[in-house]
Image 1 (cartoon, helix red, strand yellow):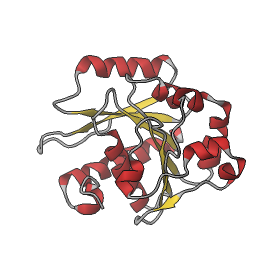
Image 2: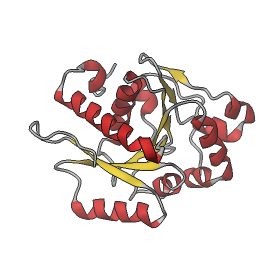
Image 3: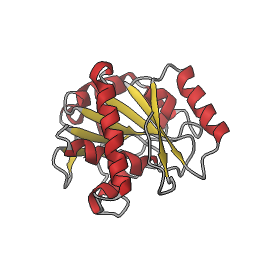
Length: 217
């Protein structure tokens, strides 16, 4: 398992504990808000959204919540690489094939209670695919299968995918990287999500100094 999955490779590390704190805050937020479908994105590329999602998914599953990772980054998918599985079928298969919609090609993982739906074959027009009415049926089907469904989506400022999908899900978490992410792009990403009616539920700080814990707020 890659070292980037700190919650598995070193579960006693401060970073792993920070993910458990994030999990706790998310679960408490979920009591009234029913945040079962969550997009995880970032303002720009290279801020750690996919690794953050994978580690959060691990700790959610470890707390006995059935959890599903969905790689909805139909441009540069990475979850199949993080988990070492093939990407022959996945989310796009559900959008194109009724049989795949009813029986998604979900990969099991080494973590009990955690499944992975990879992106599947990449389409020529990702934004149009995510904006299609069929996507609503996919979200509804996946919602029947887990307590938490975490969608890995492209950066907000790079393409429109995060805004398109974020407004159809219960909430959005924005990942920002200490020492890299600037205030203006973060504010623009926030404004863009709020403009389309997405429910921005918080931010996660990555790459923080060791005396600073990753936060959710």
